[in-house]
Length: 265
Image (cartoon, rainbow, N blue to C red; front, side, top):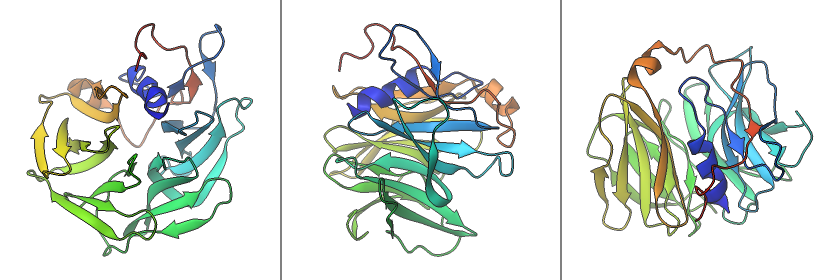
């Protein structure tokens, strides 16, 4: 169920308005879920398909997002803050009880998790100030992965103990990351500031292979249950014209019916 929801986010992502969608249960087409003053992006659906966690940008701070929670079947604009801090890069635990995320408190970037329905917070890492951390990914085998200073770190979600480190064969800044359904592969976005490519990492063998190339910006990798990988591609020329500090007022969460035949996972 999880990858089925996430794949829709990738399939309907456009070049200019990175809006997130979820499948509608009615034939009415598209239904808008939020209407924040700036944008709501990076929606992640819970394994049971009942909740969405997403990044909310505000006019007070259009650069650093907050994490908000929304029931998929809720009425319009009823989302609420999930954590009391600036946060991003979220993913759900396999049981849907927790959400992992990264946060930046000044120059201190760390990985945390929050129990969704109680708000209990647990810090999982203790990196030095200035450490660059990418988005988090939670595997079906109950492990959390993220990129820190160009290296994939895999930790135990119970106490944050390091399980594995994988050095990537390139120096770009990594952002998005996603586990395959069986937990054996990781898809990672390598973003050097001008373009982005997707790398595939074999967790057991610690081997990385670049699978997309070119001037376009590839991001947001997600997996289908059949092992196929989906990602978003932005035209490089358009990307350079887009200011990350001024997000479109149309970047909000919406519901949409899936493209026929795209979701047979």
